[in-house]
Length: 250
Length: 310
Ligand SMILES: Cc1cc2nc3c(=O)[nH]c(=O)nc-3n(C[C@H](O)[C@H](O)[C@H](O)COP(=O)(O)OP(=O)(O)OC[C@H]3O[C@@H](n4cnc5c(N)ncnc54)[C@H](O)[C@@H]3O)c2cc1C
Image (cartoon, rainbow over all chains, first blue to last red; front, side):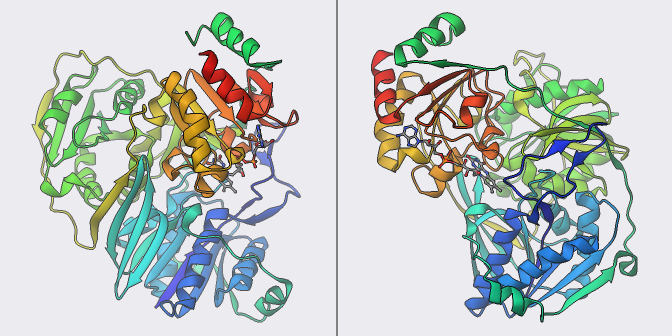
């Protein structure tokens, strides 16, 4: 079966982004970028399913400017077979992304559609569910284990208080949680080999998706810092602070 | 027009966050209804009807709703949405699974994990692991959103009983089937609602240390136990105890971080706590920057001392 993995280029998770002086947006000029960590779990899972002989072809897709080719190369170096960049300068929110991905799914006809459960920049966590809705397909979000037998996937999902297991019929949309797997490191020779793998540029216009831009970001701000705390010298001082200053423990 | 709240419950009790969503919903100054979708909805509907500020409780009843799928709930909610301009729920693993599906079927955007409702279509929410607050506006005809429960007080539960009405309940769609669930049973208060949270990090080193060092402190404080991702990944604590960007967001009266470095992804989940205490042996640890009280110490000495002194 064919697997489609949708990935996003985001600011590296180690970097604490700054707000531009005019508050219009975050300042990510020159900041280190990479594949959204959850999407890396999605790629890794597709590769493992291919190694098990379940998946036969892995297509990685992203949406954005030409700069996004680097994460597609990364996906190819990890083990994806080919990649597609839906090229646009527009900023899309989750619904727009889901609509574009729907057009890609209709073109590619994958059996398995994998995404990360959320992107660590906008933290919205919507795209997979929206894509499943638009395609009228089953969804399994926050996957920490995926087992595929025939045309059915059994997915263990991380939910509040524990886990839930769903059986969904394929094709379906599955979103990856971090504990799904440990993504492999990309070695230099793999990166070299990835250059030879096909990477297709598809202009967004050619997909005939009608997009609206109903969500505007009006401004951004740095949250108020917590007031500076104090260091206590030992457990007794800590207890007396909590009892007398805060009155929160008996 | 009206506002619809999607109620989360465990079959017997409404989640305490529902009453917080009701408070958030009052911002639109229009009637607020609650949807209870359940296999045995009667007691749940009565609980929802008693929340102050609720007009109608809509009841969807079907045996399959014992373990509802997002697909089924979306098919119930989407037709109802015709009568509503706002559809919301408290942000949780439940609502964030269902509402994006609903929004897409309605062809509208969704705003996740709203911290503040500025006006009828303008919201403040965290981005970049809560390091940045974004004000966003949606010009969609329907507003679909989840709200951060801890940012809204719970509505009182002594309201004049709202009217309870049943609604059409389409059958569960084929293609998706609940198989099983595994809840980590614990007599402690639920993490998201606890007044005190004691969290352990990688430094605990084992599940035994969670049980022998952290648990006695949590017992004395009637606290929930939390964990960092490193502790969960290492198997010291179950996944549902993870506090942070990709775990649970907590805002207790007291948060005690033990052997946790304070990575931004962890801080995201706890920095709205009223009082933060950090115990860490590294004086340079990030966690001290967000702690009200910091103690540089070996946790294996300090925590038992603290427990003994309580
Ligand atoms: C996409 C993404 C999402 C993430 N989401 C989350 C999330 O939701 N929640 C989360 O927590 N993390 C999350 N992380 C991981 C996060 O970046 C950190 O790696 C993690 O929080 C570190 O856990 P820790 O503080 O327990 O471990 P460490 O960073 O290893 O810190 C251990 C601390 O213990 C101290 N210590 C060691 N021994 C002792 C001792 N004997 N006594 C006292 N102190 C001691 C050390 O000084 C150190 O500060 C995420 C990461 C990514 C990339």
